[in-house]
Length: 273
Image 1 (tube, one colour):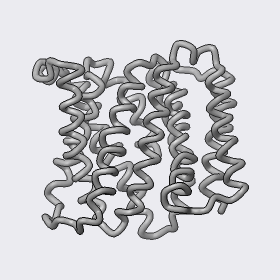
Image 2: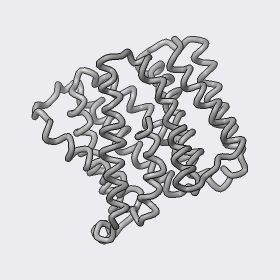
Image 3: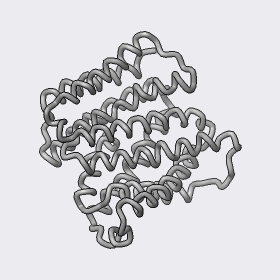
């Protein structure tokens, strides 16, 4: 959770070091692919997996990285983004109910509504007035992340290394195309990247994507999902702490109250049935 929480302040450091946001996402994804490539078994999956596989690649690889880095790029404060990303959990539960027909209990509906109320409260913070675009973009990221969780349910029989490597190469290609069209001068940007920018994108690819997510997948071998997933509520705490130490960013009282409501709701959502 510390590694997942570090994705936000390190992304800001990388973008501040002249890394264009869409190109940042593209380079992160190609690092994921390069690291997983030596461990792949070259065997095409059954055709029934093609649609969810591409859905996972576009939602988790393209959508999440696109909205994440664009939101970080346009925002001057990170705390609302870190908290807003927690919306992915209640959204994933709602999407699972719609597309996989999983039942949602009354208690879960209460917590889902509470989490949205917490986000709404943060939206009334005067500081958010200048950060509205970033807040909307991070909500877009939460929608993509929630969609990826639904697609991943259809891919649980496939090797995790394969699904993540496939996601990496597809996301890299599409994000690179978007970067060329909307950011331009891609070759020039790559030549001008300094060491700090490369270190931040390496951190995002290796420590956040591979070590952060793979650690959770590793724990699933020994523990039930219901025992592991509640810890997901910890990553915004680490994200805000790192933002404080790196950028001297102090959340407002409204952000703290709204954050407590959202994080608590998300934690309980993953504990109850």
